[in-house]
Image (tube, rainbow, N blue to C red; front, top):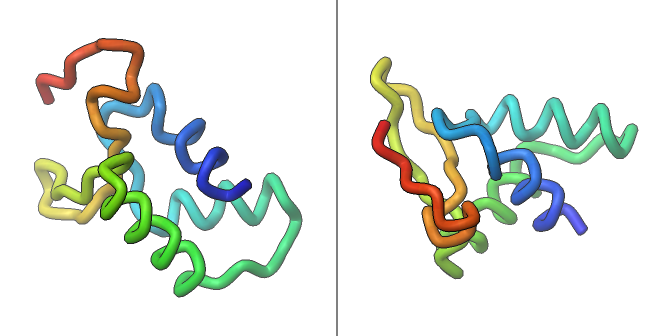
Length: 78
């Protein structure tokens, strides 16, 4: 369930989301006390499956992006 929520969060956010942004949104949506380690484990599993990309934005901050093939064929040129 959290996997699909992370996919929805990152689907149209081409600049990527930080772990904090993902966690904040999940806490707001599910009104729960999910910790960073749980979210990090989910993101890592999604990276291993090829769903998410872990990268750095232009400011050097680590962000998570949805991998190109999951974006309805749109290319990411950022």
